[in-house]
Length: 334
Image 1 (tube, rainbow, N blue to C red):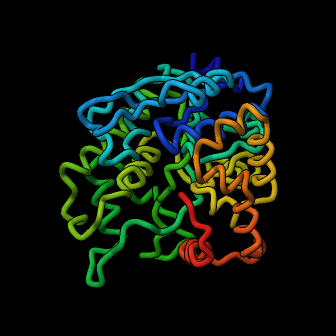
Image 2 (tube, rainbow, N blue to C red):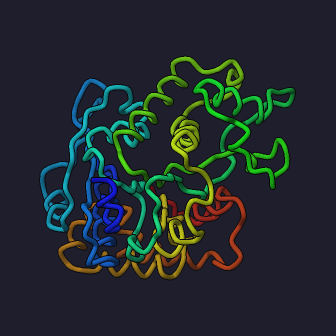
């Protein structure tokens, strides 16, 4: 089944959808996929956490216009149960939902706050060699002044799971510099089978959470746990950095914008045009206006005011500077 799907360049696209902001982002994602890839033959699966003891409130997408329109756009809402994570660590959804996806079918996962700008089938995915987003900053670990350093911290994790640490290093980068060590943003990843990937992702993450190696004693695991476990999973499955050509994912094919003010501030003209185009049809506009940040940013022009604050060819290097400038003008929303 895997070989047949890969040979025909078909795969499932997966996001997580739940009540509140993520349901509206899921609608934008689905609309952008259908507009940018009208001939896409794969399935669009929206993994939906179910009500249970790990949630204080029902996380499911409410019955009504958002859910109806998602299904009209061809999305298949796929329920899953949280057994380890939930409201306390919603990033765990991307680990727990994988076991409820179709076994043996290649998948590409995107964070819900993503727009599809072009047909994803033009990306030469090798589903035997996984990778994840390289649009990341050195958010973890934060080695203390007197150690342990990057090498000792990361090596303790590779040793924990019986993985070869040396082969994971980028030797073009200097020792004790964060980019020497395999590290991804978890906003995108893929593999040939969600069950294999998900079982390992969950196993590694829960092990690190419950019994972190001594070298991690000074480190904060939240909210970075998914990004700590992810490079270990990818390395263990034969993947790594440079498994895809640059500037397709997080480039010309997809845009992980994270929050609408950041989208307007720093993303490409193509991303802005795609956002406003897919949000324009009346049936979509009527629904998205129910979410205040989208109403103000997209339909009342606040996003364009944010964009005017920045030269997109000369953006501040640090995201926090961008956020602070937007907040200072009173335009920040999330």
